[in-house]
Length: 100
Image 1 (cartoon, rainbow, N blue to C red):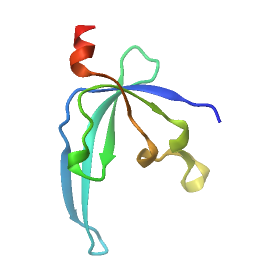
Image 2 (image 1 turned 180 degrees about the vertical axis):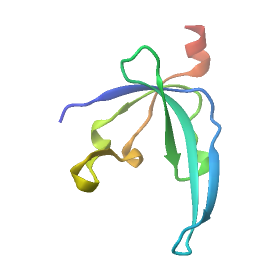
Image 3 (image 1 turned 60 degrees about the vertical axis):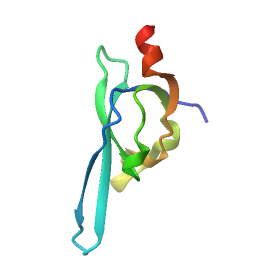
Image 4 (image 1 turned 90 degrees about the vertical axis):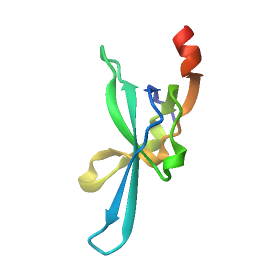
């Protein structure tokens, strides 16, 4: 299977965490991090990724990920992305990227 490599940039390791109790009475937590994704347009697009734990934040820097393993067929036969299958591979740390 071919790869579909996407470039991403993380500016901050800030995690937006929130939680509550589901309609079925089960507690839940959501840990989201903002990532900028380069999709071929002039400017990157903002995307939120979920983490199982707030301590798993990506460090600032440039990353790549292969989109192919995350593509699935979801409800009603629609193409979906399973974010849990995205593996972000560090390209270079932010400090190195800033130096050029």
